[in-house]
Amino acid sequence: MRERLGTALRERTPVWVQTRCGLEPRTLAALTVVLVVAAGVAGGYFWTGRPEPVRAPELLRAAPVASAPPSGAGTEAVHTRALSASSGPKVIVDIGGKVRRPGVLTLPAGSRVADALRAAGGAKPEADLTGLNQARVLSDGEQVLVGLPGAPGGGPGPAPGLGQGSGGGGPGAPLSLNTATVEQLDGLPGVGPVLARHIVDHRTEHGGFRSVGELREVDGIGERRFADLEPLVRP
Image 1: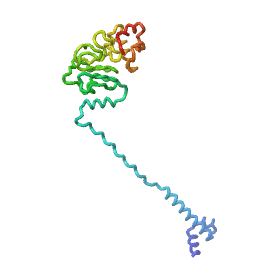
Image 2 (image 1 turned 135 degrees about the vertical axis):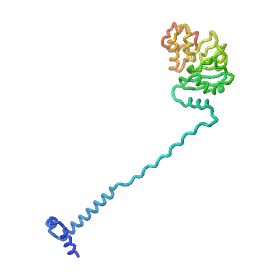
Image 3 (image 1 turned 45 degrees about the vertical axis):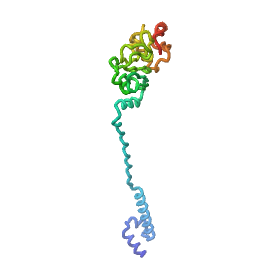
Image 4 (image 1 turned 30 degrees about the horizontal axis):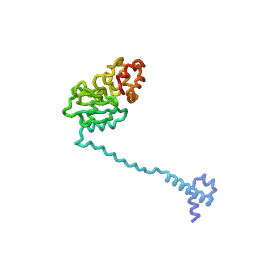
């Protein structure tokens, strides 16, 4: 059997291999074993390095869409929530008089009287809004009275329904630096439109006036002008 295997290998082995190996059966058998082992190792290497299928990750479920507000919720409530959720500088105003929900409101800076009215639930049916400037920009710390004569300081106001933003009362009452508008500050002696705007800008930048003495920090107000304005204004 061994001789037949050697003869078969000699017949199928190239001449150069027979010459190198000297046609010895043991040499041919050893060469055959080496070739078989090498073929097995190579096959195992290629088998372990074959590409394997990769499972795709599962898709995440989409988050549920937020439900719409209840049908019974009014537009005022929705508007109020939108104002509260907004980010950025704020103004705090006190709205009172003939509104459905009077009180202190926190609104985004730059809000107008109309925004405060909506946040307060709107004006009552009997409120007279003829003299109310709903387009006026609100100032931090001011009080808005709707449909009432007079101002927070007391005394009759210019007309029923006026939204008081100055904080001043009747004639001779000090003007509030924290709530007065540019037009109202412009009416003070020695204060023009430019200086009035500087006062409002300083109020907005520093979060209001805590004392009348802080008026000296406004650009354009010296000691002499401050002495003239001190008895006419309040924080």
